[in-house]
Length: 278
Image (tube, rainbow, N blue to C red; front, side):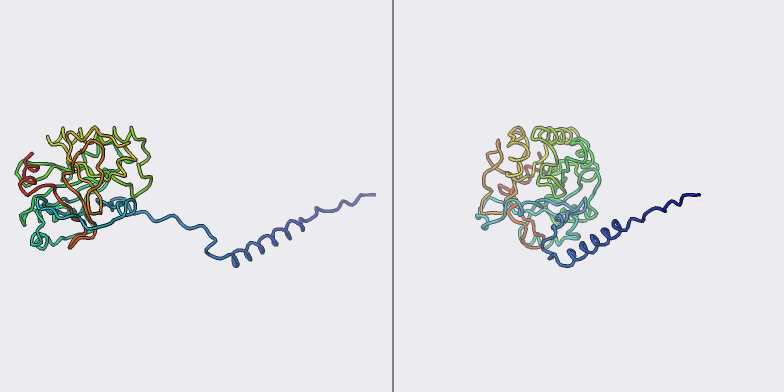
């Protein structure tokens, strides 16, 4: 007589357990307040949108109006986000020199560079170009080459200032671009050496003392040959990075008239001209 074998048992308990867990998850999702959910990471700008002094307020704050000095010459710095700049207005207000962002990394050039750079010259200003460094994307030498190829060159006409290496807080990620202090010093040195080889000039270094101390270990080895442009939004430039006894330029505000970023050259106009001539 054939033996009857029962069919497979359906996993009722597993099915019911799954349904109960799903229902519980739905209830929790509806009842847990939104504030208990993890906050999203702050937005970072798209590559190319960085500009001089972008992280100064966030890291160093601001405080006080700059002390008035007779032997100082007003300047400005601009980048692509400002588009067409009212240079005649700036000239009428006493601005006599300007720097324009030319490039960033090896992947971005300022679409407004020609208008900004040439128009500043046309109203009578002494002007120059700066490069926003991204040491995590390419070597210092490669970025110096890119800068020179896209507006960062120099000519001894008395109206063209030497190029600037803008090395500061990283708006795209880790403050020191993932580099050790010694590796950062080497990167900066490679950029400066290549820029001098390409142009015959020593580049200006733009930075904040707080960043320089943290990311280079307050390295003093560039001070003898490279002018310092310090960023500090306060009544004085404050403590300078090691090796420099004075700043050549000082970015003292990001909220000045017409363009926001305003700067002071540490000397009368003839000293600006002297830096241009080299």
